[in-house]
Length: 344
Ligand SMILES: [Zn+2]
Ligand SMILES: [Zn+2]
Image 1: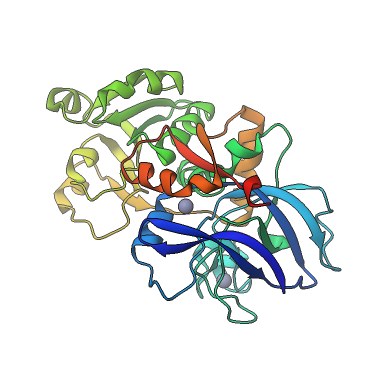
Image 2: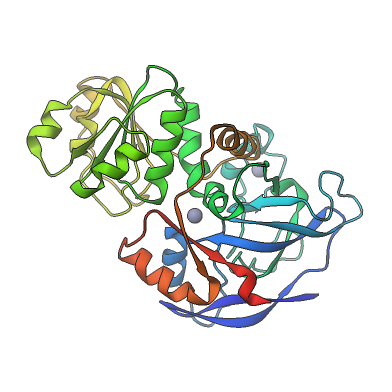
């Protein structure tokens, strides 16, 4: 085994620095020195639901440098810049895997942390650590031109908004609304704008209007202003809903144009929908999460080509508790990224 250092859960809001073990490299594995790891809402959920007797190391959007390769690795060499997202393996044979949608693998993809390794049954430990060992197929070359700190959040937040934008055919002429301007939302705005869509932000935080415009949005609709919401009825081909708390979908379905789609990405619990809110205008309700390998690679190249990365606040990894606490209060514009170099 290889020993590295990481941050493990020691309570619902506390992590403690500790030695952790990584597996010896299998033939198709690479070892990655983790340089930057984003802090995702899922990390908060994992910590909240965590059994304190289990070993939990969060973190599933990171960038770093290859430090060793297994004998069968051909796609990477030592020194390459790479990125890893929230899945690190899948069955490889089911219909979803064959379609390049490993994120929907019928036997469930192996998650980057809290997952069960498909070969030895061990529980995976995440990217809040200085080293990660991963199968080469689930690491992505980091295109040159992308800042490694700002690119880290692309691997979870980025691909989560990219897949619906891409699969719903968003492009020039599309009218897109992004509800909620946070980690997911700000990347959805940047990508939709770069795809050529006319993009609007919907937020209850009016003081984000300047940010919305800076990100390329045409305007911001105040979701608490019933007149503004009514005026925007039936005007968007796609509404990307990134609001992470439970909320009424009806006001957002009303914004969707005929035959358009409301894509739920932020809150993934039970929702209630009046069928007539779909019936009137033949509207569609959809969802998505994470991405398969081909989409992840395409998304990274698209971001490099268009100069897109997350707006990040980089903190030394020793301040992980501060990052989690502020994320819990939505006090970040728009993503925390931990600098892991203080783990050396
Ligand atoms: Zn995530
Ligand atoms: Zn599969």
